Image (cartoon, rainbow, N blue to C red; front, side, top):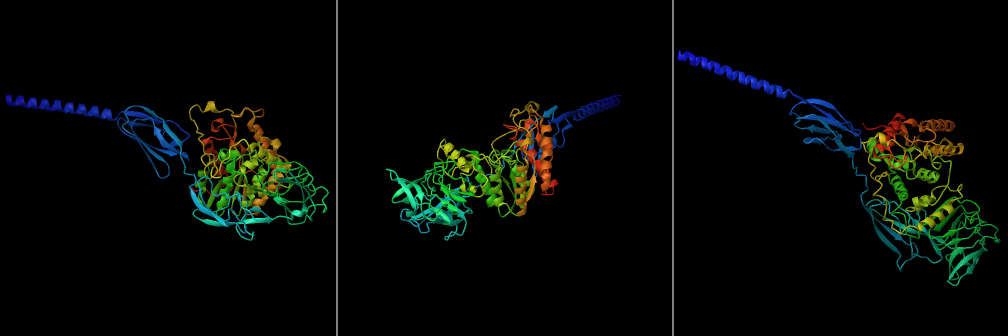
Length: 613
């Protein structure tokens, strides 16, 4: 019986043990089957492969974040995670040991792109070509370029040759090569050297000039009694030992030859003043003068000259402080990328702020060099366009998106002021490219420049704006997009001041644009007209959409006779206020990316480019 009882006890113990084990197993299974909800907060900066999921308690969840072009993962607010960035920019985000419901917010930021220029070194040997300075016949200058792609030449102060004015530098000793104005830029490759030769213009005979002398040893030329038919009319820097500082208003009055028929006028360094009517009886087409000229009367010439060559005698004043000076650097990229096809973005500052050129460059690959020429839409657009056309060539794509309230960009105004000279202060030679024969404001604009230049301290050509612009020409100062409170930011940043302006589209202006486009096409380039961005949240007198429709209709009607039309739908570029920065046409960083995506898609749809997948 005892044996039997022990058997029963053992059986009962075994049964109890089995029940206990089964009970524990059931508890474990129940615990492992507990599901926990996890979600990833929506963001414009990425798309999550799994926006919401349920996972077993204690397990991990891996989500792929497809990052928007230009943005990168920074962190998330889940305590225990791993983030791995893949070659294509996607991020594998693993949330570890999930034990409680979680809504995870991911922080992203604009990716820093290394689009700053690297320092380059080069040297220039200045051959004085018959002149001398400090007893020397030449000098070699080494340059380290961190702000600019091309070096500014020496302005030749102190370099002299008897009876001659230094006209500039030339790549050939006989003057048949490329002319470079004093202080203007020349192309020299990294680690390379070049020799430039002084270019001299011989003075006309001193006896042909009448002068009025002053006690300080200076003089004004008051009359002329020569033939006046030399190809270059070169006024002497000194006459009878007096330094010439003034051209009197009487200079060409009652001259024996009746009229100066020379094509080119050369003023010596040191001319400070030119009186009204000084060149009333002349036929000059181009002029060479120095930027220390202090005063020139509006009526000094009674007609418009075609070409203006400016030599630097003064140090620059704006290189370190004014964003418009970056225009010369943008053109430098256009010049130095001439061995490739270029995609040239041209407008005003809506392109400086409103395109991500690094993104565009990545999208088209090495076949093209992207150049952003958008600097300031209020500065005469005709001269900017003519500079671009001077360098445009076969296979280039000119993308023109004029600001819709910019009369200068729409070619309905050709007003010129001192800002054009600020744009070209780093390379005055750019001002010798346009044909200014239909502009009667060039000397008034120069005088405006001289006046406002006094408000800035002298600086150096080694200064620049590279901290605010990348190599493409994009404005890169921080303009972050804030996801919080999006709707509250959908408002105007310029009041009711900015809207489509169909009244600025004139027959004459569109004809001028069409002529420029035709010239670009004649050189083998493709021209595309698109729309600049505008804030659709503005409470303008005429709703933005309504004004846009009127603008688009009129533009298409005026373009039709010339065979042009926009490649874009204007509505795609009416964007919410949240995408703008400090005005209704300056985009923030995300806005610039959205606009770039749309513009690239338009260019591809037009068959102009093929995007790299």
